[in-house]
Image 1 (cartoon, each protein chain N blue to C red):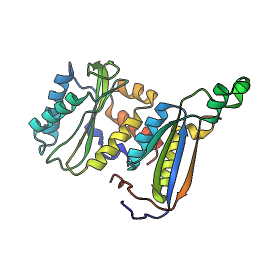
Image 2 (cartoon, rainbow over the protein chains, first blue to last red):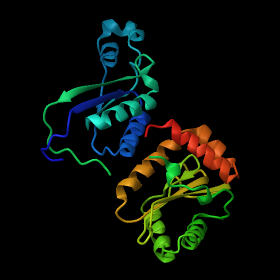
Image 3 (cartoon, rainbow over the protein chains, first blue to last red):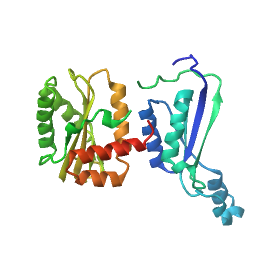
Image 4 (cartoon, chains in turn red, green):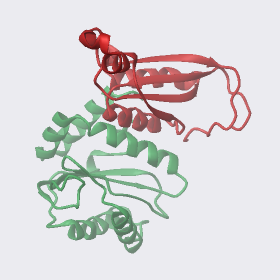
Length: 120
Length: 155
């Protein structure tokens, strides 16, 4: 898309706890025609607090998913793709119903450059 | 987009015979070039072999997805082949392959081709689906199960 704006753009962020879920989300993105996403290995609050701050070691149970690897998937999506991407992530992550299983949110993007065209 | 839009019931071969991967690729090249006369058998055979040489399309759990872009093919098609006793396919988990999704597209349909590969990859994540499909020998039932699984996913 280069520097063109394409309706309301959103930065979709999906945080998951399982590498298989990353694969499933990215495969699903391809199916939706999205071919741009960035995945970062990250650490959640629970992981750091429970493992690096000794005084809180006994409170691991307060942080569901504290021991799992955590991945942040980011993709800039337009309005049309956003709902589909939401549905996909819900499907992969069991509707985010289990505490600590992950989180999904979007933030508005005011300007984008360098975004790849969707697969058609 | 649904996989069943590209997989007619008559493109399901529920009890296919092949002894090994080279034999399968040769047999499927014969079958496709007969079913789709516009497909050059030699080109198809070579492209399938080239793809396998680059890395097996046996993605594990008894499933393989050989695929190619083929000149002259009039439309994208997915052919489902069941080999109930399984064949060695150099799969990543070394398990025999029992279920093969052969995806063929004309040049210029790369986007659709990639989307369908993604759709198949997602479909086969369901182990119950794979287990039930791989032992079924009824094309109608196989088509019904794929359509049902297709409907569970986001379009």
